[in-house]
Amino acid sequence: MAQTAGELGEVIQARCEFAWHIPGTGDEGWQARRMTLGGMFQDHGSHTIDLCRWWLGDVTTVSAEVRIARPERGVEDLAKQCKKSCPESSYMVDVVCMGELLVEFVSTHDNISLSRAPGFTKAPGGAPANVAVALQRLGLHTRFVGKVGDDPFGQYLRESIGVTGVDTSFLFVDRAARTTAVFVAVWDDGRKDLCFYRNPGADMLISAEDIDGQVFGDARCFHFGSISLINEPAASAQRKALQIARERGLMITYDPNYRPTLWPDAQMAHEVIFGQFRQCHMAKVSGEEWLTATGQESLDDGIRAILDQGVELLVISRGEKGALATNGSYRIEMPAFPVQVVETTGAGDGFMAAMIARLLPEREKSGSLAKVDRKIVEDALRYASAVGALTCTRRGAIPALPTQLEVDAFLKSMK
Image (cartoon, rainbow, N blue to C red):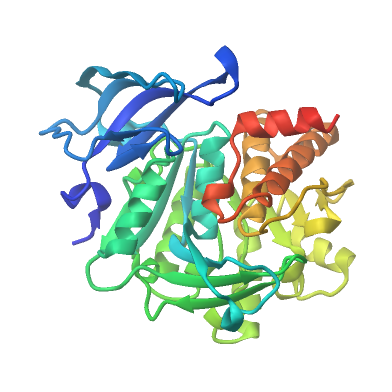
């Protein structure tokens, strides 16, 4: 029987209302969030609050006030009040993200192959998980659905995702398979050298039996990728989740990833990746995956092929060349922001999250992304480009994803 991370007894999770302060931002820097606290919550290294043994008995959630002060002043208040709250299943979630969650070992040096890398930095990753964290940092409540192994890396991922605020109620644990790991080397032009340890990885073993309507609760949007569609039983779990999301009328967003070593062959990759466009309302395709995703070398032919599947809005991320958005009636091109690139891992995922955050309420108003005013889409594309640019200025995927406050400050500095 599948178990969620909260059922293992190793990490006790508490649902909390809390606030924290970003140093140097004055009174305006207090940020309010609702999140799952699992194990250790860290205020960016300034303080650690140990909630690992906060025994809840039969209480599935709690409401608490946790206030983190400026580093020089220490912790002012911790859990001033604790009370029984609503059941776990009723926790508000805006976006459900489903797919792979893995440990990334990123080369400490750029522009060299994995075989020559002298060392690596450990970080949580996986495209759908990156999107979930990015959305949480941009102000939406998110839930991640996936599976990790019952091993030290699985524990590391559960804690890493939990402390960001992403709901992990449906982050399952497999006691037989190991947590997936990938070694990554990156080049300044966006190319990556990847080596996966996934034979099989726990993320491949989430099954249709793990998925039901409770996964979605009152969610407004469902986001997925293509990696989970490569192998069974994960592929069946992904298809079931898509079916439920469509039946509930959620906005569905899709960001395919093509990793050649994970697919049996390029033809299968194209058929599976392209086949999912008919399932979504907004899709993002990167320039490096364009040919595999669309089957077309021509930009115009590829755009037409995707929009003909019923996609309301197509977004193309092109790294240093900027980004493009089109609904078939208009085409918006946005140049990339000039930043000092440290690493590009996770930039596309942050970009996608920003598009979702900005356009989800607009689709709810209009009924279709194709009907959203061009100026609104252009503003969303600029905002998403800023998120992607900021992500490139730090190492790691999830650790590098910016907060809403950081994005706003960056855009203000660019005026």
